[in-house]
Length: 391
Image 1 (cartoon, rainbow, N blue to C red):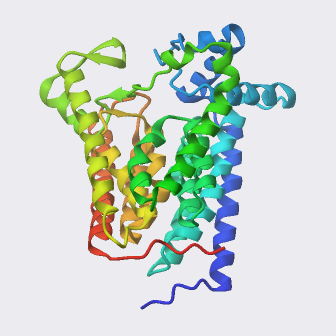
Image 2: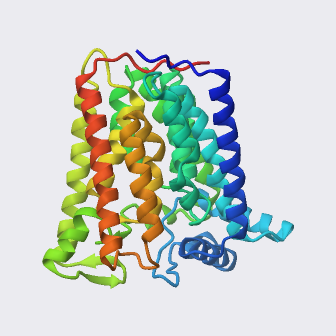
């Protein structure tokens, strides 16, 4: 078997690559113009300052977008706004800086958790140079990369057998977006007993509630108005793009959100089918004595979600960036290249509008399918001990 212990030269190459890309991200974060997402966050800041926590959940921006975040994000946005005011640096820079710096932490967590097998160095080098992270985290203006970094940290602590710290990290990820709920079945069945489950979910719930408490005390009605069912843009990706081509354009209550009619039924069916599949796969993978690697399980959950999701935003593509490394070099390279091609060719519209964009989108979708298949095969066909994490 190929020696997977990194040499001093390889470590130096990784540090140089990561440092260069991080500096590049900071430069792009500062110099690139507003994007739709960055503009949306500026609108959120304006509305929060004007109407407070109560008003922001009634908000619809210039793209008909709603505030689809937990109440903790209100403090994050206000804090970034205060930094912009004090430093004179634009709000969009601070917004992009958070996920760009989070990528550094994600890199080292993957370094610690990734099984030390063939192509270990090459996979890490690809992750350090990943163009997808550059184009999304340093430019788009969203916090999905930060959210995923906390999910990875939670996985790290679980593998280290510290469910309480894992729960706090998971609570941090849920405080950015509600998306990490999709990982709960895999985590629940992976944890070995009732005590560890109580520690994990208790600490996650306690952190989430405590962090949201000031806002919830001010207005408890927010619990009923937070958009847990937000589904992003329908018909812009994968299966639903094909459904629109075959069945015709959907009808929207607030274009391009809130579909109604037949397409709404199909979207709900896909959503619940995905959740049932995630639950079933998570149960099967963890019922054996030797459970599948948790990093690979979480990658399986993300890829399954991306394959079947009825709603889509380009920022979703960054979710799979660290997890695909648990598959193999080929799956990682395939995903990074096709995603870069899709982002490079994608026009200003949410839905692909020409042949080149459509082909690039489906190439990227196929790469996700391939990554899912590789992770599924790995989880079911390899009998492995949980990943050993180096202290």
